Amino acid sequence: MKVLLKNCLIVDDTSDYHLKKSDILINKGVFEKITEPDTLNGDFDLVFETYGLSVSKGWIDAAVHFKDPGFEWTESLPSLAVAAQKGGFTSIIGFPNTQPTVQTKESLAYFKNFSENKAVRFYNYAAVTLKCEGKDFTDMIDLYRNGAVGFSDGVFPIQSSDILLKTMQYLQPLGAVLVNKVEDKYLSMYGQMHEGITSTRLGLKGIPSAAEEIMIMRDLKLLEYSGIKTEKPLLHFSTISTAESVNLIREAKRKGLPVSCDISAHHLLFTENDLENFDSNLKVKPPFRSKSDIEALKAGLADGTIDIVVSDHHPLDSEHKDIEFDLAEFGAVGIQTLFGIMNKKSGLSLSQIIEKIEKNPRRIFNLEVPSIKEGNKAEITIFEDQTEFTFTEEQIVSLSKNSPDIGQTLRGKVLGTLRNNILSKNL
Image 1 (cartoon, rainbow, N blue to C red):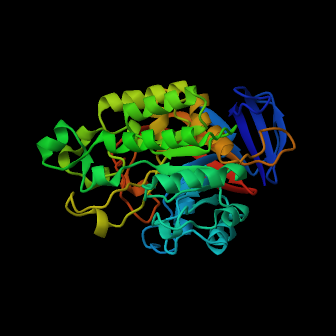
Image 2: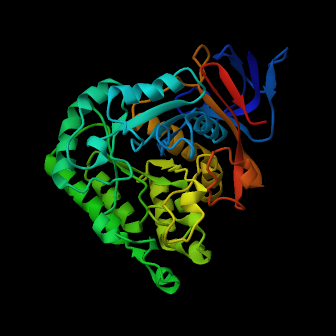
């Protein structure tokens, strides 16, 4: 298949064409010709030509809750692949909280065999402890050798300081990353939303910012105590949400600690005040915080404290979501809307956005792909950053519809992806 990207802005700082407009001819999944704009003519199977047309290396979502195996009715692997592609992702990394838990080489092979030759590659964080129970270690060395790109207990933050410290010591020689969601479960127990004036007014038990910040302080202290120094991050905090969390990580980086972090795109869009109508689609962990927290997250994105933006895509069926707020489970789908939210709300340049959803996650988790250069294999995301649109429930391709983004105005659309010579287009 011959595909032409006409008058297209290339956003790839590993390419000689970075931030230059070009015509790009892709033939059989390989960059055949990259020239000055409006110079390539001929017969093509497909031509992309639109105002604001851009291309980058394929995006990667570094925080997805896989539901297959075990909860396939909320999101199967095929439906997740379609949702990821619609969102512009050629790779995604999933937490291990499936049934069975991702803790054996066979469980890793399940995802690799499904996706290796498809349009979206599924990678895994393997479990740190058996069944993510925080007690006995998995065989992390064997799991890493069989394809785990990092280690995490997923939705169960590691509460034991001993487990956390030993995990970092085990992973350091491998060059692997520990991914920890940060929540003191005893401080947040029975909490429904961010603790503050709004939670008091609504009569809902709050989840204090301290529940997150205390865990970050502990983890950073243990990392410092370990004395481990690595070029790439060893400890990665998943979905931080408070201003103090940003400050703590900023200071840790200043000290030279091997640490990185991400936020979910939704935490740039919503605050605690949006829960006034008890919409359970807005019930997530960590909870949506205050406006001042959002400003701190934006500052952290701008100065590089926050490395990655993720969807934290967490499909849930109506039985667990479309019920009374205090009974509903935590989680929201968001893999289709991540770019539209970032482009609208982050305050970042296009190049900075791509850094957060392509360059940094690939660097941290060792998942590099070839640059946009003649002769290289193409793994790309094709998009435009100009069009504003209102997101609707009908646009959701996930099996679960628990999206807080319905009715939101977003900016920028994914037009297609290309991986393994498989062109998936959203025209």
